[in-house]
Image (cartoon, rainbow, N blue to C red):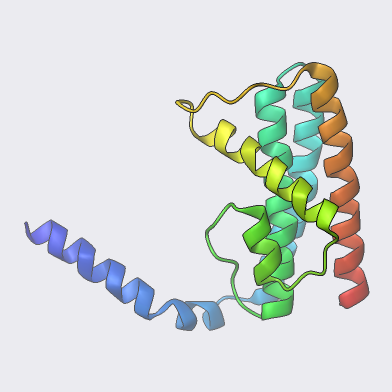
Length: 153
């Protein structure tokens, strides 16, 4: 029982000190971490999709968008990005001005996160051709988000 109480106290201490943790970490390093990771994951996504590993490829494509959005959160909120995976929520937190079709696409891409993380959830798997089309659209959105990042820096 003592271990449970200790863990609970540790959790509360972490929550209470989240803002202190935010200021202790170097935001610029976080931004570079997220941006570099997004590029790397997008490359991995392309490799996986081209090898026929659609589920994993689209998961990494989602991860690439998640990371570029987290870079936006860090830059424009001057805080560490929250540990969430919802692309729409991250875009909202970052106060990004996105077109409705971009928001709709982020919502659609969120399903690849669920499919990649939770094996018990069996969503319909896109065909190879559909996966390649998704990947192209994700690359285009990543480029758009990267340009927004540069324009607002």
